[in-house]
Image 1 (cartoon, rainbow, N blue to C red):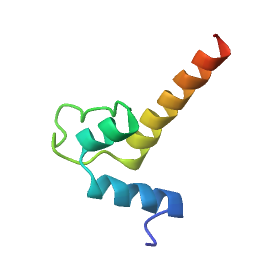
Image 2: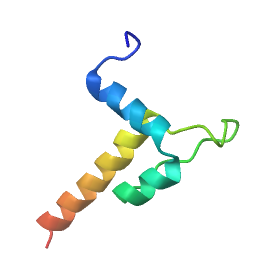
Image 3: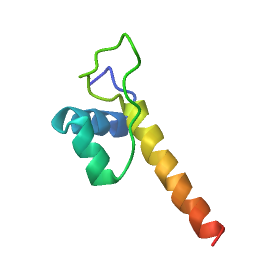
Image 4: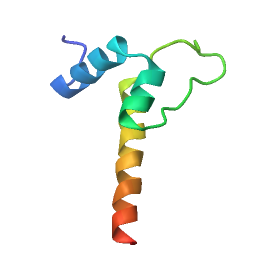
Length: 68
């Protein structure tokens, strides 16, 4: 647990290793960046990739509300 900077990061890592990328994308209606060329295509997404995908979705929803 000392390798993680916060409980939030530890929770996200737990979710990532519990559910596969496709399941997370369907459940949360997000699009997680695919691994780059040269990376393991079957690796779980990083905590930063999930937060960026979720943050982008929240920003899109906020902008939709503002501009309606």
